[in-house]
Image (cartoon, rainbow, N blue to C red):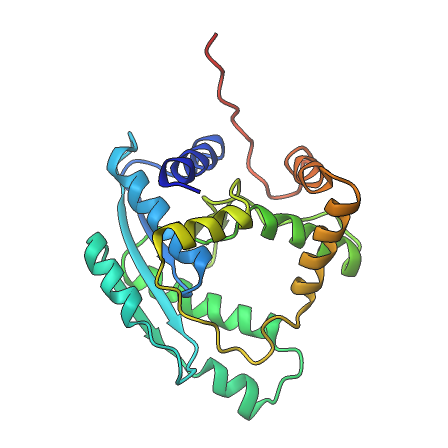
Length: 246
């Protein structure tokens, strides 16, 4: 995927779900993975021409794995002239040494988001951009149906009352395969995950299941995504479709 296509998908999401207002200060949450680095490029590119001017920053929650080196991300943010902050935490130690969690994903996500959102507010931002893409949205829906018994996926835009912070997901129309292509084309400085259960989660199961369904029934993945967009899920904002010029 080329930069122009990435910006097109990002602009579509931002416009259709009103993710950006003039004067916003948006923080990109960067884990160091391919998704968040692609989002950083997307938001940096969008900032140059979007009709509603906004400020951009970036923040990483360091979970505490000693092998993780975020210096390549620091250099990238410097090159892009995006203010960048790394928040040091002991989340990994708490999960795997103190609590010895066998299924840590939910608690890890809660602690990580809490640290991220707190840092974002301290930086003076009113919005935070998460790097969830199209595949993430579909997989979340499938997990919700299988394990919670409800039709749900996270919203393109949501407001956190307690934090007075808006969460946006500008890459919701970007497929993971395109993210992989973008990473390879632009040689993104990916920081490899050191989580000991990475690749052995329920989300990985959902990812493989979606792939299997789409292989056996070509187009199934897109139909699931369309069902989500049209599903009137609680908490989702109204979608503003752009009129096509004749």
